[in-house]
View (spheres, rainbow, N blue to C red):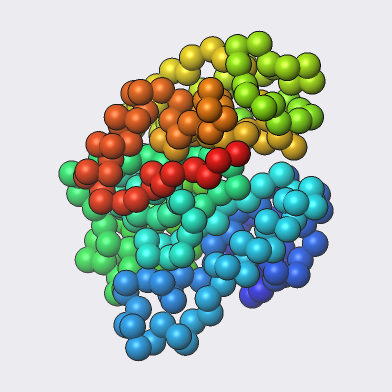
Length: 278
C-alpha cells in the first residue's frame, strides 16, 4: 500500500494511506514510514522537510491491535529512527551483497539476525554503483525496481525472515487470563501450547550460514493474553515465565542472557532495558 501509485511493483498493490485505510481482513501489517527525516544521509538542516511519521503510524496500528482489527504490526526504519526496542537485521546474515542495517519494531517479540560482515558489498544509495544497476538488484534480491526506487527499498529476505516469525505467532492458541505466578502446573483456565523454536536466517535461506544460531527451547507451559505471549525473551523472542517474585524474566535462559551481553559489547546498542513489573 502506498499513497502514490507504484507501477514497478509486481505483486498486488493497494493505493491508500495507512493512517486512514481500512485494515480489516489483514492479520499483520508491515509498514515502512519515510526514513529521510532520520537517515544520517540527510543533512541536519534538511530533516524538518520530511514528515515524522513513526509515532502517528505506531498509534494507528496499536489502536488497530487493541480493537482486534489486526493481530499485530511491524515498523521498519533506518538506524537512528525513534523505534521502540527494535531488532536489527543485516543483509550479510543472508549472504546478500548488501549490509543495509535496518531496525524493526513489532507488537510481538522478534529475533534480529546479527551480522556476518566480511564479504564484498555493493553500495545501494546515492549515485549508481560502478558495478551497475543489475548488480545492485542482484545484491538486494530485487529484480523489478529502477535505481531511484531501489535505493529506498529493503531486501525481501528481511520481511520473509520476520514473516516466518509472525506466522509462528499466528499458530499460538488463545487464552483467557493472566496467572498471578506461572508455574509448571498453570492454574485452571490456562491452556498449554508447545514452545516455539527461534527462526534463523539459516531456515529462511538454507544455503547461507546465519550470523546467529538461536538456542533450542526448553519444554514449558506459556501463558498467553489476548492470543499473544505474556512476555518474550529479549534475545531470541521465545516466551518467558513469571519469576517467583511476580516479575517477568528478561531472558528465557542463561545462554540468551550471555549472548545478549556479548551483542551489547560489540554493537553498543541498548536493547536490554528493564521490563516493568506485571
